Each structure stands twice: as C-alpha cells, then as structure tokens.
Image (cartoon, rainbow, N blue to C red):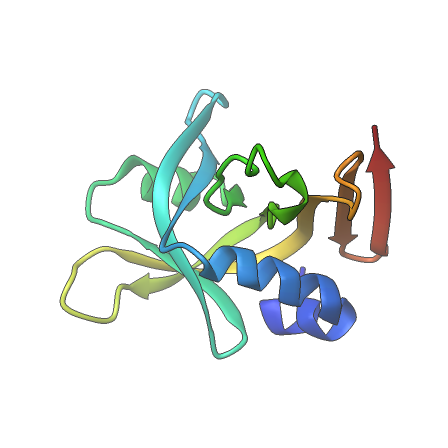
Length: 151
C-alpha cells in the first residue's frame, strides 16, 4: 500500500487534481464497514500532512470502531452539482480507497483516535471540455494511471 506522498510520486497530475478537490471543502464522507459487513457512511475531516493522508475519529464514534475492526475505507470529497448553464465548469469529485492504520490518540485538544491512510486507489471523476462525456481517471497500486471516458 502507498502513502499519499508515494501516490504523488507515481501519479503527480492525478494526485494534484484529487488533492485540490479534497482541499476545496473541510468536510468529506467516509465509508466504513460495520461488524456485520454492511456499509456505513459518516462525515469526516481529512487532510494531507507530511506526505500522509490523515483523519481522526471522536471517542465512541462508530466509524473509528469500524476502522479498528476492519481498516478498509473509501473517502469521497464533498460533492456538488455541475452548474446547469456551464456543466464543463464542474470541477468533479475525488475518491480515495485504502486501509486505515491507527496511529494512536488524536494529537490536540480533542480526544479520539488518529489514523493515516494506506492508499490503494485514487479516482477523479469530471466532465470533458465539451461536457458531453464523463471522464474517470484512476490510479491503482501496482497498475498506474488509467483514463476512461463514458457517454
């Protein structure tokens, strides 16, 4: 699995676009797995610090318990609708998947658990310049960057 810095080294342009989308809004959505295997989505703040994608969970939060039991996650940047009068202006969205690694208690005034991401996939979805096709660019560990256009 890769650190965010390793993703930036292997796929610099894609990582930069994903990072802009992630940094555009404070709040993101994370998907974790409940004990019975069903999905759970939760709001979360995540950021890149010193080459690592990091996030935390408040005491007693189910997402933290989920990640400590089963570290698989998917993170989604804040989503918003493309402008109806200028769909090509839509910046798109970013998704990151991987495994959360516990790094101990949160460092700061708030209690909770701190995690860093071992990244397995980064996806940026946007429209092409003509706004008539969906463009999906993705990086997967061991595969590199691929691009798919869909009508």
